[in-house]
Amino acid sequence: MLKKKKTTVYALGQYRSMSAHKARRVIDQIRGRSYEETLMILELMPYRACYPILKLVYSAAANASYKMDSNESNLVISKAEVSEGTIVKKLKPRARGRSFPIKRPTCHISIVVKDISLDEYIEVDFLDPLRWSKKLKSKKKYTAMAYHNMYSNGGVWGKK
Image (cartoon, rainbow, N blue to C red; front, side):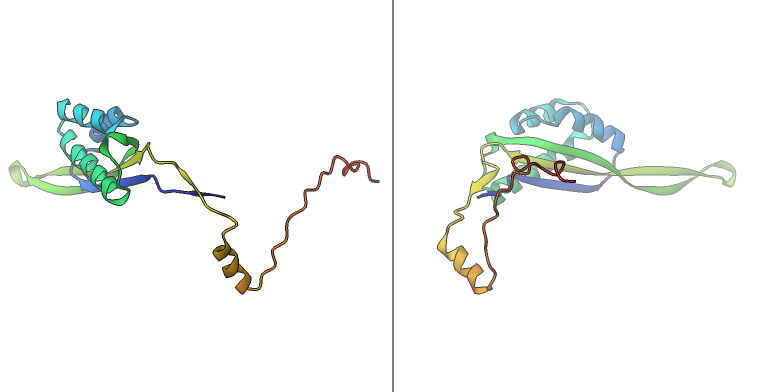
């Protein structure tokens, strides 16, 4: 029996004070790339949004090394997305007693890192005696399902 194993970790940065459109411009460049390649790209890009995203990538790699004991050379950015956050609104005083609105957009950035060296499924021994003894205590009956081929005996369409 195969059991699904956790191979991904994530880092989440909420309420970053930048436009979601400007952050997506950077995120689209790193999606699907390896961890080391992502660091080189983010350090050399000339945008202001690169530094908070770089910190999130570092955080996701640290989470992966802590939770899964994975090496940084095996990490891949499997999912990276930016969503819009709240907009901080202020009023700036202008001439003749008027005011001018200032809107500071925020965004939420999430980066999911996957370790490609780990298998997604692990083998679980189905005939383990400890597993069966726990299930037998609950007094449930286990019966094998019989395979029924409906085409060999005339099927549904042969009956009137």
